[in-house]
Amino acid sequence: MNARAQSRVYDLPCDFAILMTFEGNRHAVFSSSAHASWAYPFETLEIVGEHACIRTEEMTRALLSPGLAQEIVTHDFTQVPRAIQWGYQQEDDAFITAIVEGRASVCNVEEAFKSIELCEACYRSAASDGATVTLPLRQRIASRNE
Image (tube, one colour):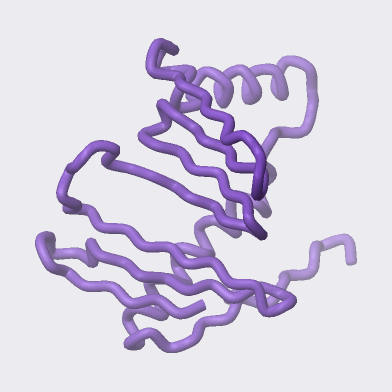
C-alpha cells in the first residue's frame, strides 16, 4: 500500500490518498478529506467491479448497478431511524446475542486488529512520502499452545 497525506486545515493529517494493491494485482483507491466542500452527499463510498458498482451516499441511500444493460437498483433509507441507518442497532443486537447465546462475535479479535493495522500502515506510508508498506506489519505470534 502507498499513502500520501497532508495537514491542510488541521494539525493532524486530514487529506489522504491511498492506493492498495491486492493479490492478483488488483487495486483499490481510497481518498478522504476531513474538510471537504460539504456539498451533499458529504460522504460517499463507491466500489467498482467489472461493469458493476455499488455506491452509498450518506448512509441514507445505496445504489447497485449490477452490470451493463441492467437496471440500477436504489435503496433509500432516509425515513429509517438513524440508529438503523448507521448500523448501531444491528451491531448492538449482534453483540448482545453473541454474549447471551454464547456465539462467536461478528468481528473477531484478529479482524479488529487488521483494521487497526491497515490504518497504521496508511500513516506509516504517508510519513515516508508514500513509500510502500506491506501488510501484515508484524510477524504472527505463535499461540502458547504451539
